[in-house]
Image (cartoon, rainbow, N blue to C red; front, side):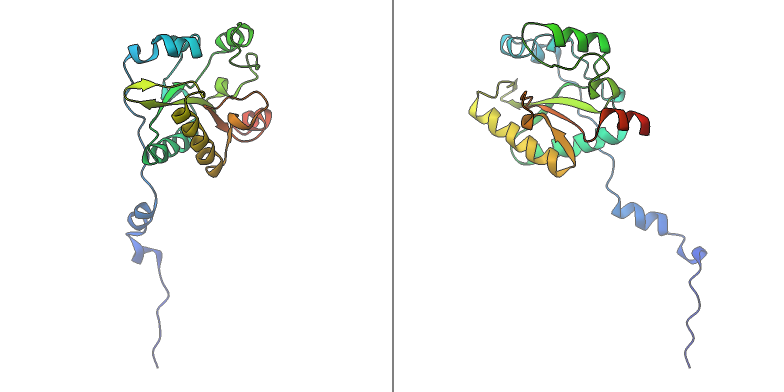
Length: 182
């Protein structure tokens, strides 16, 4: 008769190593782009204030950052490299954007997931230039792909809103519930 001894945890000293093998490594944000990339006439016309927008990844929710970086990785694989236009947004900046002549947002300070590190604005980059306008055929295809990837990752994409915000992706759920759970 053959008896199998019970498995003991100490016999699995490499469990952490094995689990680590199946856990995807954290992605690191890309290096910051030079400021001149964000101050072209086309970028400023399409997105006033973009030159001074906050692109500091450390101000965003770390788990959300990992989802965004995975999306950016997939977008690059699809032929649409994306750049971070804006991440965290102060309530004052949010109010300023909500009241300017060129409508960028309808949310006032405290009403946007940008203030809580749970939203980003991305744009495709081609030949060293950011293409913000969805009127550009290639950029529109990139924004559609971004929407597909964002939804597949469980995020909300601004391209499906009545007020179209094609480069905007955010954590799904109500802002109140998300803030409570932090």
